[in-house]
Amino acid sequence: MGLISELKLAVPWGHIAAKAWGSHQAAPVLCLHGWLDNANSFDRLIPLLPKDFHYVAMDFGGHGLSSHYSQGFPYYHQNFVSEVRRVAAALKWNRFSLLGHSFGGTVGGMFSCIFPEMVDKLILLEALPVVLDTNEMDNLLTYKRRAIEHVLQVEASRKPAQVVSPEEMLQWFLKNNSHVDEACGKHLLQRGTTQVATGVSLNRDRRIILPEYCLDIVSRELLVQYIKNLQARILLVNQRPSAASGLHSPLNILSGGAQVPPPLHCIHPGPGTWQEPCLPGTRLLSTGVQKAGTHGGKSQPQGGTLHTLWDI
Image (cartoon, rainbow, N blue to C red; front, side, top):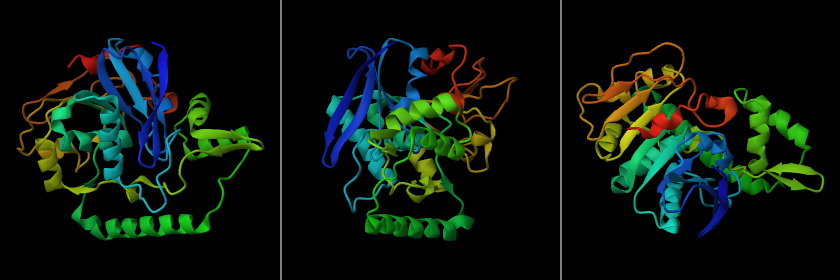
């Protein structure tokens, strides 16, 4: 399935960039990339998925080819959620599926709770909400303080984007993303950098740094109420069992008796079978998927078995 087109969707601060695959007449799927990634994250995954869907992968604001937010306009979690609503409006989508990787999954999950009638299926790849432990309250306030101070410092410095050679940029990227291989790094940097006369510079907004500075961190009780509002069928794909089995994971939080209206399906790829109690009224899918994810270095698809994502 070849790439059909590159899109530029107008927003008040500029545009949101996206890329599309498949027929416009097919059921729509919006793909949301991870933190500091871009829409190229899905280039290796989309060809493995069913061809009877229309896939659109967007660049969040300040990422990839999308415009940076205006000065003084912060990169908060809810603003990324609002971007999803803006894209849906621009594409005239009233109901669609969401496929989110990592941070993109947390954005897609929140959107699905706020606009439940708009989301048919929610597929989360290595993505879980961040739940607040009451013992971490002081740290949360520290994160918020640092986030505000960082943005003010960047805006005050007005330093131009650093320009380096393509090889230097690649080595810097690989050093800071040890889970990504060289081929994958080059692919992400194709959309994540701009060629200038003396080298390349990063496209992303320098005001964006650590995800915890802008994540929507919620309490256990609030998460339960959010999830109860979901209408979408949900698929959770985790390469590492520990990512979904922690004390404050949604699986454990809700296993105490909170009933979730839609079914939740869990895939834990890898050799052998890892059994985890699912939520009341749900079931666990143990499949032959070896690696299900997005771009190669993080979770490279293998074996073409990702059609399972849509058989729910």
